[in-house]
Image (cartoon, rainbow, N blue to C red; front, side):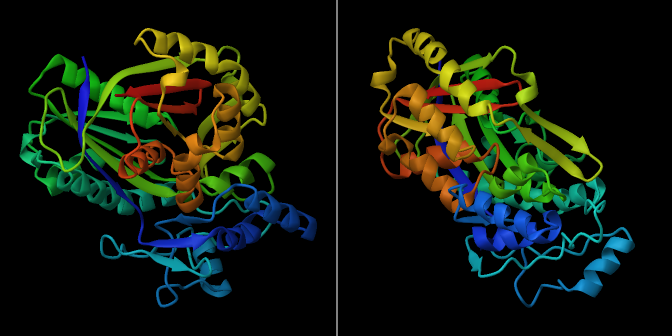
Length: 396
């Protein structure tokens, strides 16, 4: 049993900023000393990220970032209005990080916007990105919105009800009777869990047409204060959305189809404390142990080989790799464990460099890049998340 991928689409906020510009924001909310500022700049440079998109960025004409207005917003407990989305498909790269959501820390205990303020921004901006990615996926194939029988939404950076799923039904013209499933709070490997759910629907009903949509606004959860691991998270994460349309039967598409044939999931023993994603009073808080790359090096190859053998394949027969670019050290660890060359990681490093780590949609950006570059299957998709969990998917 398998699920054919008929169409894919990705979407980004219309404004992006260089990694140097991102560091400017971080200096104001994280650093108290010159030594911390120097270290922060070094950490940001080491990420492999060149630019990132965020719904919080503003053009010069939109920006109200000044000491008095931002401080007033902080004192009155409200976040400044973030920029309205610009026309789909347009992208502007800013020379500096104009934004008015994160005010400079007023004192050592200031932790910035509350979780309610951050989730308010998620409600305002998440739906638009999810809709844009879905529209592009429909444009990539001959499946119509009114043919969709199942909708799978994926996100770990915000939630509200009625949520993104209802907005997709309303704005795309999906049937009111569509079956809805939400994969929530699973982290960077969430898209692979969403694809697994979609494949189960396709396997169970050959008439099923499934829309999978992952949307994350990671920039809403920048953390204040000097904490090494949280600064690493601040330096990597960004916003984006991706959508996939699939079914168990052939359907015309604008590109050569690939097929999801199998998936794999495993919890790595004794690693629960190494990665976490928790709800705090001032946003969601990421923790990533420095030991994670070492765990990946020693825990990845053997189980993947065993799983692939069940499909009559070996690691050497994998032609292309869609590895979630959680960061340069994660990619390096995967390369060492799986004996991959730099060519195998080109798509993952390219996505990380241009867009940062967008959590769950990121690996779909990587797969989309592989397809755009006519990379041949079999393709192995791989990612890691809280658990410590390893998720994989095989495309042929």
